[in-house]
Amino acid sequence: MTDTMLSESLASARRRLTEALAAAGRPADAARLLAVSKTKPAGMIREAWRLGQREFGENYVQEALEKQAELADLEDIVWHFIGPLQANKTRAVAEHFDWVHSVDREKVARRLNDQRPEALRPLEVCLQVNVSGEASKAGIGFDELEDLAGKVLALPRLRLRGLMAIPAPADGLARQREPLARLRLALDALRRRFPEAPLDTLSMGMSDDLEAAVLEGATLVRLGTAIFGTRDTSRR
Ligand SMILES: *Cc1c(COP(=O)(O)O)cnc(C)c1O
Image 1 (cartoon, protein in one colour):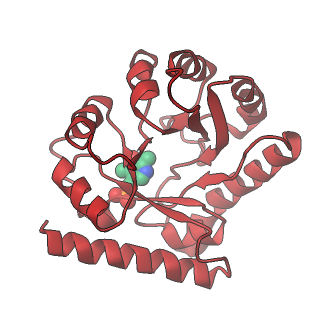
Image 2 (cartoon, protein in one colour; image 1 turned 30 degrees about the horizontal axis):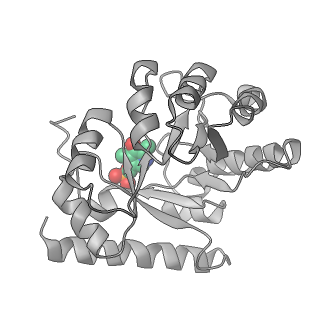
Image 3 (spheres, helix red, strand yellow; image 1 turned 90 degrees about the vertical axis):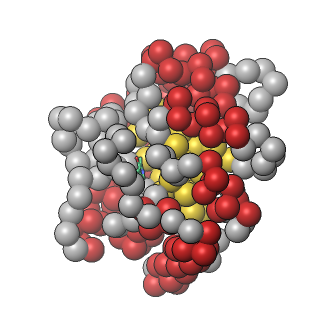
C-alpha cells in the first residue's frame, strides 16, 4: 500500500467513525480510532502517525517489540496489546505497552501488575469477554466477570478501564448488535457494582461491524483492514 492509499483509507476510516457517531446521536469525540497494525511494517505505522493517528493495536509480542524499537523516536505514540496473552509473555507486555485489552484471567492480571515497571504509569486494562459463547474463543464468560473485575481492581499497577470483545461474525446490523449490546449492559452492571472504578471503555467494533458497535456505545473501535488494507494471511 502506498502512502497516498494509506492517507485515503485513514481519512475514510475517520469519516466512517464520524458518520457512525452522528447516526447514533453521540458526540463526535465519544469514540476513538485504534489502528490495528498487526503484520504491517513499521513504515506504515510511521506514516499513519505522521497523518495524526496516535493509538496503535498489536497482537503478537515479538513482532510488536521489533516495530516499537524502530519507532522509538515517536514519543507520543500509544501502544495497545489486543492479542491473546500467554502468561510467559506478560513481562514484555507490561514493559512495552500502555494498554492491554485481552486480560481474561487472574494469573495474567497478577503477572502484569507485578511486572509493570515502577517508572511507568499503571497499565490500562480491559477484560476480554467471550460474548458469543464459542468454546474456542478467548475471553471470560459474563458470569465470571464481576469476580475477575474485583480482583483486577485490587491490583495497584493496573487500571481497569472496561471491556473488550471480538464477536463471532454476523450478517446485518441487528444480528451484529446483539452481542455488543450484551457487552454494553455488562459494563453498565460493573459500573453500578464498582462506582469508584474508572470504567469508561468499551473496546468493540472492527472493520466489518463498526456501525453496530458505535450504536451500542463503543468508545474505542479497532480497525485494521479498513486502514492498512488486507493482511497477508500466509504470514499468520
Ligand atoms: C485483527 C484485529 C482487529 C482488526 O480487525 P479488522 O477486521 O482488520 O479491522 C481488531 N481487533 C482484534 C482483537 C484483532 O485481532
